[in-house]
Amino acid sequence: MLNTVERHIACLEQIYFALLDYEIPWPRFRDAYVEATRTHIRNSQDTRPEHRFEDRFVHAFQLAGVTQKLQASDLAHLVVPFGKNVVREAQVIDGATEVVPELAKHVRLGVVSNTPTSRS
Image (tube, rainbow, N blue to C red; front, side):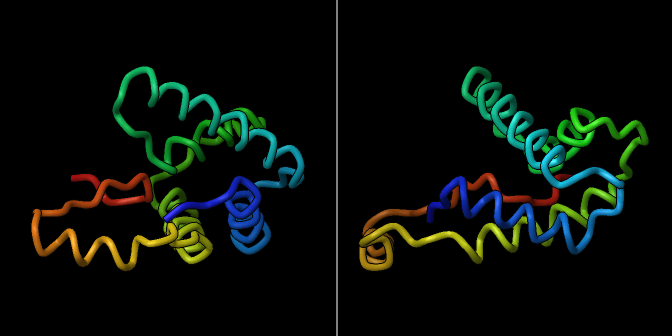
């Protein structure tokens, strides 16, 4: 599955207007999120470990000027619906629905994802 930048930002906008109450104007938060995302993607490319949406949000809030520390429950309140929106808006890659079941008959498949998951 894949998502466009525009769809990803539309998912962010949905949770911004539904869930955020930090008195940050939408354009400032959007720009901070885009900058945080660029930084985290670049770091993931350089170091290989994937980052989490939680990391992006913490960084975006810092860039937007929020000084209060976000609790894990605050982050989950944002990340879970955001992740669901991103997955719901993603498009299946052409041919994947036919190829994956056929491959599964011959090889063991796994899932690699950068959507939010709980870490123990």
